[in-house]
Image (cartoon, rainbow, N blue to C red; front, top):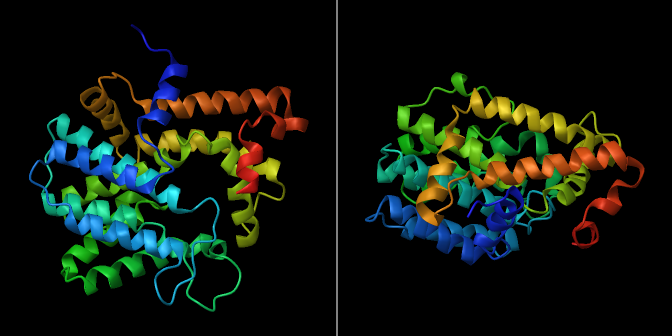
Length: 302
């Protein structure tokens, strides 16, 4: 039976309970072990547990996460998207060392810790919007060094993490290996796909606006400005996927075919459906756009 785009969207949202971090971690482990049956996931699980504690404010010296858009679920959305891309790539015959796969998944888990504040820091982590990647990379370096990773691994992890910068030119990064480059492009892709395919993405744009407002990001004086900019942002992501990020988003379709028996890229279907809905709202209902965001009230109250 042919699956309609709306059913695709529902399927992606229902495959895993994305609001439950342990369910996400379990699916990541299942997905990765399909590609690498012998991969030991102990260190990945250890970093994951650390990030749960960090975002929850249970790590001494740090405040809990207080950015509403770049929160724990944003991280777990990217984490599972990264595992799916790696699995899809392996399904298509690409090979990676287990060491690099482990490092790439750890870098994904840590890619937005730059929003987390130390105790005594004022305001919210949103003020670090424009330099959070550098802060995240510094955190990754210190963490990996403390866990006994060598300097080469740390350099690779930093390079992969840098690919999440939307304006970063991937060709300008001097990766130590071709594998690191591909995994970095996957991380940059997973970061975008994870957030934009979130079923509440349109509602969460209001939360992103609050972060941008505190960070004094130009061009978004009013919340509606960010909604209007989202359609242009979507077009830019399509170009970035195809160019700087090497088209690695194509691996999603192979993952869903092999893992779930669905011959489609459910991320692309979900994102396109949401963009179509946003276009309709802005074209016909702009003055009352909030009324047409179905999860508006729930998101606004979180």
